[in-house]
Image (cartoon, rainbow, N blue to C red; front, side):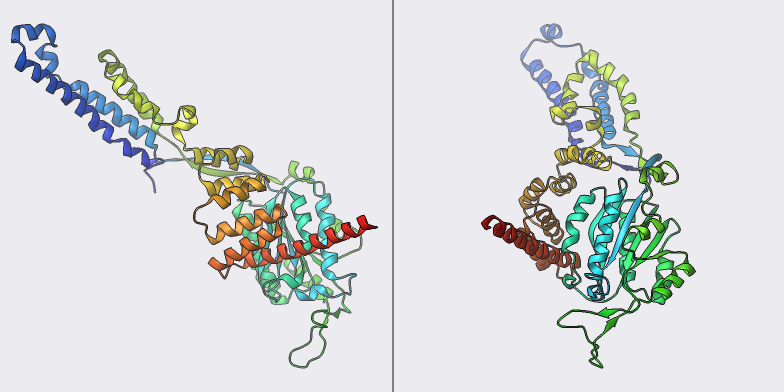
Length: 464
C-alpha cells in the first residue's frame, strides 16, 4: 500500500468542520432576529455593516484550517525512509537433543546430564550477545527465546528431561527449523547454532544443509560413545519387534564425516572445555563484536508527511487570528490528554511510542507507557517484573490460549509452579495442539518436584 494514513481514526473529528458552519449560521440567525425588532437605522450602528455580513470567506477559511489540521494529524504517508539499524549479531541458539536415547549412561551420569553441564559451561563463559535454548524429541520446543538473560536458561536447565517431552522421536530437523525461526523473529541475520545430540542421520544432514542460510553457522557436539548403552525407560527400552534391549550407539565417525561434507563444525564432547574451544564457542564475545559480528542493516519506516500541511495551515491561522475565529478551533489542539501534548504525542499513539521504547530495549518505560494490556504484560515480562505481568494477564477480560500460555510462563518465572500448571492447562483447553504449552507444563511439573525435594532437604537439615 502506497498512500495511506498512519492514524485514520483522527477523521472522526471531521464533524468539527460542520460545527464551524453551524456556529456561523447561528450568528447569522441571531442578526436576522434583531432586524425584526430594531429599527434599521439604529441597527446599522449596533451590528457589523452588510458588507461584512455578506462575506462568507471567514467560515470557509476556518473550515479549511480545521480540515488541514485533521488531515495533518491523521498522518498522511506515501514514502518510506531507510534507517540504519545496528544490531548485535552475536546470537547463539542452543539446540539440545532431548530424546529418550539421551538417558543412556555410557556418559556418566547420563548423556542428558552431560549435555546440560556442557551448556552450563558455555553460558558461564558467554559475557555478551543473545542466547536461546531449543529442545527436541518428536517435535521441537523453545525453552527460552533469544535473550541476554543467561540466568533464566541456567535456572530452567535442571528441569529439562527426555521423559517430560510431549512426543518421542528424533526430529532434529524440527529443532533446527525452530532455531531459525527464533533468528527470524528478532530480525537477526547472522548467528550460530550449537547442536548437542547423539544421532543425526545422513538424510537429516542433507535437509539441514538446505535449511541453513549462509549467514548461520552450525556447530555440532556429539554426546555418547560408539559402544553405547541401554536406555533406562520402564526398565530398559526394547525393540517392539524382537523384544531385544536397544543399545543406543553413537556413530561418531559417520557424524564427523557428514559434518565435513557439508562444512559444519564438529567435535566429540570432552570432559573439559576443549570441545567448546575447538568449535570457537569460547572466544571473547567483545572481540567478535568489534570485528565482523556487528552488522549494519536497513529498516524501512513510513514517513509522516503531515508536518507539511501544518506549514500550509499557518497562514490561514494568522488570517483568522485577527478575526477571532481562531479561538473557535483552539480546543481542537487539546483533543489529547494534557500530559501528552509533546511532539511525539502529536504523531504517535501511546502504544506506538511504547513500541519504540520496547524496540530500543527500554522495556521498563515501555511497560509503563503501553495502553494495550497484552503488550503491557509482554513488556513487564521482558523487564522481569513477573508479578506485574501476572497481574496484567489476569486482568484480561477474555483470555486466549496464547494469553494463558504467557501467563503460565510468568508464573513459572515467579516460581509459582502450581499456578503455572493451571495456566498451561487452561491454554490446552482452548488449544489442544499447543505443544509449547505441553512442554512448558512438563517443565513446570519438574521444577515443582525439584522445589519440593529441595524444601524437604532443607527441612531435614534444620531438624538435624
